[in-house]
Amino acid sequence: MNFSKEMEMLTLVEKEFNQLESDGSWHSIYLAIRNKSSSYGHSVLEAKKIVNKNLNRYRDVSPYDHSRVILEKGKCDYINASLVKVPEANREYILTQGPLPETAGHFWLMVWEQKTKAIIMLNKIIEKDQIKCHYYWIEDANSPLIFQEEGLRIDFLAQTEESDFITREFRITDQESGETRSVFQFHFLTWPDFGVPSSPASFLHFLEYVRNTGTLDLSPETGPPVVHCSAGIGRSGTFCLVDSCLIMLKDEDGPSKVSVQQLLLDMRHYRMGLIQTPEQLRFSYLAIIEAFKEMKEKAVIPLFPYVSDSGIENGVLEEEPDGEGIEEEEEVPPPIESLPPPVPPRSQSLPSSPVTLTQEEEEREMPISNKPLPSLPSSVEESSEEHEWEDIDEALPDIELSAVGDYSIGLDDARKRNNEERTVGTEPKKLKSDLAVDSTLANGNGAVAGMKDFNVPDVTTKLCPEESEPKVRQRRKDNKLEEKVRKIKQKMEASERSQRRKAMLCSPYAMAVGGMLLLLTGVVAYKYFS
Image (cartoon, rainbow, N blue to C red; front, side):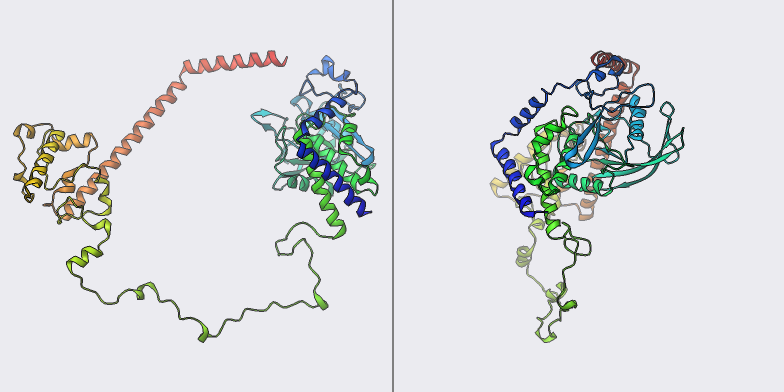
């Protein structure tokens, strides 16, 4: 093989790609190809017959009469499938639509009669909430598929899964003659409808895997592979175009003669609409360029572009000098004398004996969260957990609100009294009797109850210095418990509301309305597709 010619051809392909990329002319090139192929004038009479109308998945995708696959057995000889020939690459492909429920038997009969060894599936069953293909195979070895009209039995044998595709093996049995054959289905999973894979790497890995099985090569015992997506033109056409171009590039004169656009035009003589979008055409160029680079590297330097688990780069070991391996030098630790002294543990970095501090030093060393608020007496120490109460306008010392009827009035009076005491410079008294509250207020609804109804903090718990620390802690626990109970009640109420909504949706009236809507949707769909 002349590698200089290959290098030259690769440069021409890259230049063509770069030119289209820089000009942004992918759309115009795609339109030119579509317009030119639409003038071929091939007939599609069989596909338009009334008896075959329901055998087509899409009304605008039909096989040409001169290249359609003809079924030999059965009442109907029609199937939406085309035999695409690429003599320059010595390749033939059967491109077909994703089978319908009524054409699944025709599909397997075509596989049997054409001696197909490989089924290339490039779509998922459901895409964008729409059924793109019938589930025409089985995955249970104990439940074979039997098509009485076609006289075929399909048995599931094995399945292997890769990151981007699944390989399944089936056995087809002709019930009349008893002859059996093995067929492989290669199901690519990461190709979106009307789109392209995120990168050519996964697609090229899939293509290489299928090639290595030998099921794409023609022989007297092996017929053309069946390639399908949903319509059998977009993703299927991309697969066949890339595969054929890479084969043609291997020939000595191939790099100087191959033309991606011309090959696509030639393939469109056999099946309409191959390559559905400009993005798929661009992806074909990318895949061909990337794969050709790998082919050239493997031909010049027999390396594989990966790093194995054992750390062998490119799949081959480098030659070692003089036929002897170089032993790895073990790291010798430095002598103990040269090592720095070990860092002492945290416990040793602290003083081992207790240190007595004065009151001023204790206050200076005290964490900010443990220091009392400026407006509170020094006897009250609030922790960091109590900072949530700092949104109160002022901290009120020595306030007892347990006998106050109206919380809002009692709080205003207490604030007013506290401000007056601060003005004259008197110390706030710490006796409960010092807080003179009108008796009419004391006979009200209860301050504590009112505070809880409005989710107002119990300032008595936080601000009364006469209570001991255990009582304060107990009050805090009670408040937290009440908060948990309140949240639980809210969740229960939300759950009850949800159940009431579900009951309304499941009522006979709602079900009747849903049934009417479903019936109306079915009627519209029937009129549209008929």
